[in-house]
Amino acid sequence: MQTLTKAGTVLRAFSAARPQWGVRALAAELCWPRATVQAYLSGLHDAGFVRRVSGGQYRLSWQLAEFGAQLSAALPWFGPARSALASLAAATQSLGFICVLEGSQVICINRALGDASADHRQVQTDVTLPANATAAGKVLYAFAPLPAPDFERFTASTITTPDEWAGELQKVRLDGSALAIEEWVAGHCAVSVPLWWEGEVVAAFGIQLPTARFLARERALLAKVQTAALEFGEPD
Image (tube, rainbow, N blue to C red; front, side):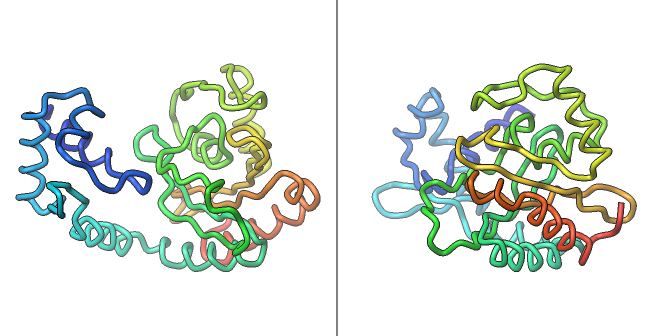
């Protein structure tokens, strides 16, 4: 089990910001011996999960994309949800997102950038999102039997106490939606609704916009997100 955990740690080190690693640099990043990192990279290469490139560097293998495609194909709601998100993001000129729970972690599995003029450097590209500071996290936790998440503070508006968190989840269950007003990223707000499928909440579906644009049409944006979700999901 420890071997699998360490292999996962190596794979998670690869990201859009850092798609390529050499043994020396990755060993320094993980604070592992170089021989250990070399052994794991070699094993992952032999298994087809990473590939060697020039200069003794490693990148993730396209085989992982195939696994991702197989996972997506096994989720009957994902294809329609992804299409609906792209249309919603374009119509609202927003950053659309679909998030799911992986254990207690909030994982973003799809994004759609509907504002061609947006500064892409300001778009959050994290795969794992903080539950306590995001609209998606609130939605997913509101409908799952999970203990309270870590209360890391990101902005002055971030929820950081169990009582406030419990009250927020109760509001989400009553309203059927969640807001995050500059709670994770200063200057940005988000709205999210649950995606129901076969009687269960399988994902959080929503959009993020700059604060001024969001607050100017908050109710209209919520209505658009709810309508888009109902087009392919099931009513709650």
